[in-house]
Image (cartoon, rainbow, N blue to C red; front, side, top):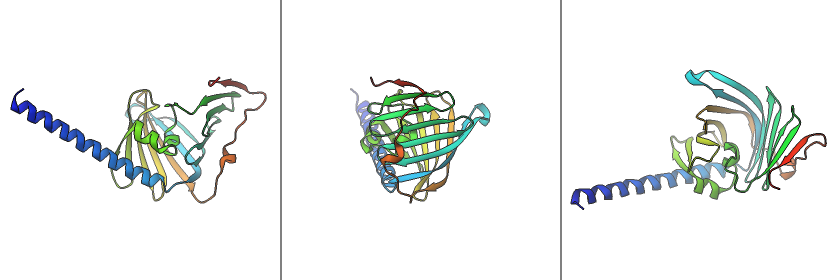
Length: 207
């Protein structure tokens, strides 16, 4: 092997090491910001964009988050849906269609971005590369293609999450703005209890 190739190879290894160190620092910074959040609730507006920046779909609703395992996402408009997660299960209840599905949380790479941010530290470290774009903005890129999104940009407003800008696995862009965020009112596991109504069609994907 020529001396030039050896030097070039060493340079590439050095750059890879620097990039990995920068990723670790950004991950630490993101986790430090997230650790300031133990519980959140509020409202959201979600917009899905098409080519040229046109809004294709807009929805709104309410959310709750209790780190590290509990998550609730309820869409009020234009349809009515509820997603609830705890340490064991992820429920999706379509209120209009009266159908409910239950999936195990363990091994679920289809978890929502907010659920990931509120979840286990080791999952975020192991499954995502993190870059810090500014003091309040971080970009997460998942390792592998099985995840529910290609990239996630999260922006903080003070001590709470203010926006998520997501490119999903189909390449569509979704922006979620959080409003009236309350980090003071205490939440507990009972706020995330869910049992499907008796007349709902229920499907269990963990049995």
